Length: 113
Image (cartoon, rainbow, N blue to C red; front, top):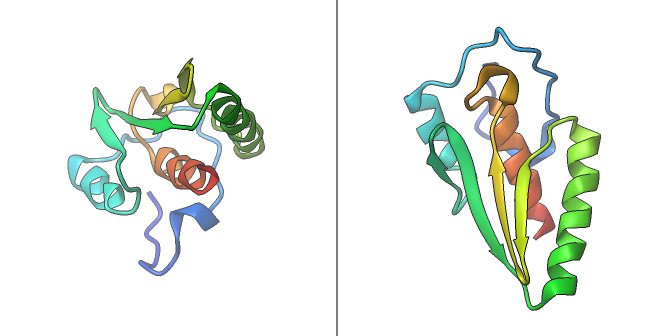
């Protein structure tokens, strides 16, 4: 993981392609990065967050914006829509765990909601 200044927001960074071979983040690194993305939680080396919207249409608009963002970043979350609720899960598939990219994408998704 590249060491970065505390003043640089995750949401302003760009995901870096990961083809595997990169190490997973340590528990300490995950704990530090979790401070920068509010209300995301970790389970099984994945980030999870539930977004609740006014109605189905609002939830689907969010999913559409999230899909455009994910494609632009080259880093794609898993998600499930339940009427007005969108559950999002992020992890780096190539390393089967968490990387800094996951936290960058989480911060950018938060900015969409």
